[in-house]
Amino acid sequence: MPNNQIPAPIEGSPVFGALESLRIKQLEEQSAALRNSVICAFNQLLDLKDLNTGVHSTRLAEWGMRVGQELGLEEAELQNLEVAALLHDIGKVGIPDSILRKPGRLEPEEYSLMKKHSEYGWAVLRMLPGFERAALDILHHHESFDGKGYPAGLKGAEIPVVSRIVCVIDAFDAMVSSRPYRKGLPFEEAVRRLNESSGTQFDPEVVQSFLSFAEAEMSPVFAAAGTSVSSAL
Ligand SMILES: [Fe+2]
Figure 1 (cartoon, helix red, strand yellow):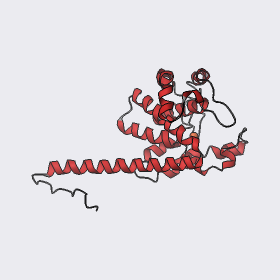
Figure 2: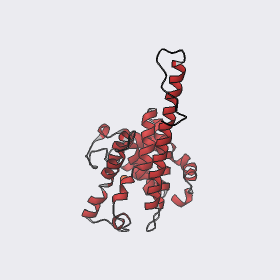
Figure 3: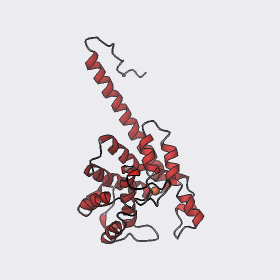
């Protein structure tokens, strides 16, 4: 036990209440610090694999938290949402670069392998105490609202709400972001596509919540992530 650790108080002693709440606070702080360290370490791993992914994930966390708060998610769910938004594609570390960086269309067998990334992410994160729920949210971030997604083909409310949020903002961010081989879509076209697939691929409530602030908040969100809105729109 570290020297600065507050010892467990003896029940019934005069200082029991005060010491116990101090001890709980200290444990909570330690667990939050550990959680942040894990997020940072995995984020660095994502940066090593593909520099753009880290920035992409930071943007998703900003947007995700806004949507989550608007939909009234509880604090514990918001924490899972932050992890899932930041680390949803961590499983891509297990996908060969020849597939990840292929500029053209993927062959069917390449696409099958690419789809494994959500299971890979789940398999890694579920090993970490405190990350089990976020691991499940990551497992389902490519489910489709109409049940045609993967890996489980879950439908509507069967899909965890955090996964439904990550799905929408991930798709939107991918649409507006420029890649070496293609320019990002204009904001209006990305909005049109989100609306078009609302109710089929995407949860309509999440789409509506996201679009209610997307345009107004686009510049500050891109600035917070260290990019400029003009490079993405
Ligand atoms: Fe993904």
